[in-house]
Amino acid sequence: MTVIEGLAIFGGAMALAGGLAGSAMGIGNAASSGTATLSEDSGQLRNVIVLASLPMTQSFYGLIVLIIILTVVMPNLATAGMGAGLAVLGIGIMGGFAQVFSAIFQGSVCAAGIALLPKTRGRILTLAMMLAVFVELIGVLGLVFSIMALSLLGLM
Image 1 (cartoon, rainbow, N blue to C red):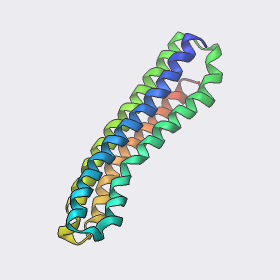
Image 2 (image 1 turned 180 degrees about the vertical axis):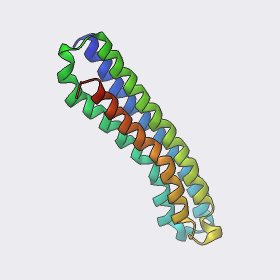
Image 3 (image 1 turned 180 degrees about the horizontal axis):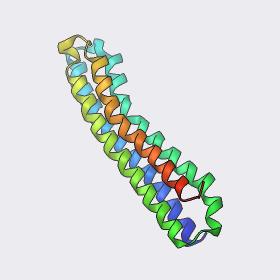
Image 4 (image 1 turned 60 degrees about the horizontal axis):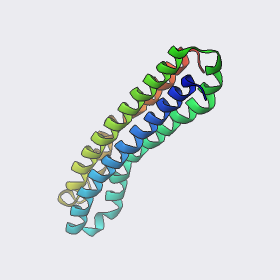
């Protein structure tokens, strides 16, 4: 493996690591709130699971970036210079940051919705999901921007 390939792989790994870390923190935050909610009203289990699982998607977005780098970008790096490896590393880091922050803050939105489930008898579920989708969009944009940047480099 060359240095260029190593940099590219590390960039993909950073995208996945950001998604995994952010999802773990977001889910942990929401699930913590869910535990308190379930102690008040165990009938809200379905709603708690729905909201607490939303920050998990950022892990998949990071995985998609890694897979694209490993399967599409890597074969095209042989003819590219050191700058291409650094660019892919930077793109991976950018994608990872988008995923980590999106998942963490989505978990906070979901935690707030979960905390209000007993008070609203579950009616807050749809509204909380809609608000969480706004934060999810940052993760989706991080994925799209990563794919666009890799494409603009001519490596896809």
